[in-house]
Length: 563
Image (spheres, rainbow, N blue to C red):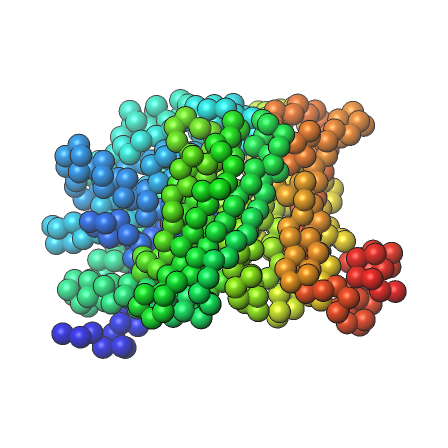
């Protein structure tokens, strides 16, 4: 029986809605601001045998689209090899980055979903925990040289057995992380999200029948692959190269190169893109190595940025062939440190994809976005509240200019929809005061269509003592422009202690900087790259930029070649 288009559309949206409700349940019940406010999490449905993506919530981070299916595959392999018995209510916890993960702070829950006594699929989610132990509060150690220094690493293990939380495993986890008393709220939120998915998916299957839904999943995968191939077919055949650079690995103060080589071949059902990064820098000492799951997912999300209309499931990735870059820092193996892979290296990989495809389909690409999540961790003890804390800040930056117009300012990162936690929330929870939150004026790259602007913020520690760590990027060179556009402004970090300014040697990466009450952390995030020759920007647009204070008159003259 051929499934009719209306039923197919209803079931596509029904599966999506199941994931969306998991997202909402997770957000509304999570304790950590990074999940509840910044939305650094995701939920999805995965195939029972292959672990492939069936559906993911619209509120989930794009980078988790690929990595979560690799995590589910790792759990399936674990269950198969060890002959682990599965029961309704079982939930695995895993954050091992080498088993389809990202960094240790991204903790995954994976649950077998049973329908009428049979394993039907897997439900999974990821939540960014503000701390999982390690050298520094928050986990973003800029100078770690092995993964053990980054935090507690968990293989797939049943945290819930038949719906009951295993207190012994929980005690091991809580004994190895900071602010452990606050983690139970996030743990139960992740479990509640999967339980919500279980109820909603059961209702969907009861209404339409298991066979019909399975048939729809097969058809939706085939159509997504067909849609992606149609988009790829519009790219001319050929080989296109691009590159991107990571500032440093946090230990050796030299840039890391991502060499992207994209080959377009075939038409119709044979259309495909092949990605080869084997010419990239070798494995690095510091935490900017990327596990293969993150490397692949970064390419998936980059292509989805270029072709956003394509439906999202495992079929979307079928025409994308990735040569595994063994022997480079983009294929990390144990015990290489990886804390910067998901939030930073992933965005450089996407940037390299944009640079390469910009030579093939220039009218569909754009100047590079800010390309950093601006990871800032502050950990200390609040003497007023008599408790320890870990504050995690992510920040927006400028998007690149495009043929459609100027880039937006203070946009979320390339890899996600996460947003900065409202400063009112952070000031309420932690002993800090935000003295400034403003546009990083002048940071938008010049072009016919300029890049958007990053942001400036200043955080003053109000009481007690704390330690500051950051893993950011684009501190050496700003996000590159496209089609003659100029690069955006760079990331800047400055710590003012006792009135003396300290700038990290690695510019965008450092750790364990001791601060006291009254000290100030100053950050400026990158602007987006410009698109098109700056001299072609219309005079009225430049006058408006000056009138709004985006650029000074001198900047306009030097950047755009105009008075």
